Length: 196
Image (tube, rainbow, N blue to C red; front, side):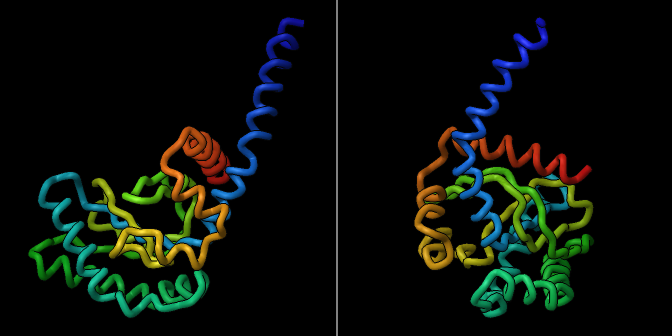
C-alpha cells in the first residue's frame, strides 16, 4: 500500500509534466532535424591547442564558404559526406601550416548537443546532424556553429527564417527559459537510452 501511495502521485506529476512539455519537445525535435552543425573538438585544453582549434575553424570557414550551397539539409549532408576527405585535408593543411603535429579526423554523423545560447537565438538540446572535426586526441573543449542554414559567419537567425516554421523560430528566438532545461533533461535521457 505504501508503494501505491508514493507511485500514484509520482505518476501523476510525470504525466502532467509530459503533457505540458510535449508540444515544446516536439517543436525542438523538429528543429534538430532541420539543422547541420559544425563541431570542432580541440586536442586538449592547453592554450596552444585551443588557439589551434580556432585556426582550424577559421581555415574551414574561409575554404568552404562556396561548398555548402545545397538548398536542403539532405543536399548539404550529402555534400559533407562526398567532401569528407577534402574537408579532412583542409583541416590537416591548417594544422600543418600552423606548426601542429596533430592530425584531424572528420566524420559526418548524428550527435547529441546541449542547449546552446548564441547572441540572438538559442538552439535546444538534442541529436543533430553534424560535421565533426576531431583534432588529435579530441579531449579539449569544443566549438560549434551551424553550417545549414548558414549562420556560422554571421551568428544571426536571418537565414534560419527560410527553413524553420514560425513556431520553431519563436522557440529559438525566445531566449533561454526553463523549458530549455526540461528539453535538455528529456533529450539526454532519450540519447542515453538509445545508445544502449
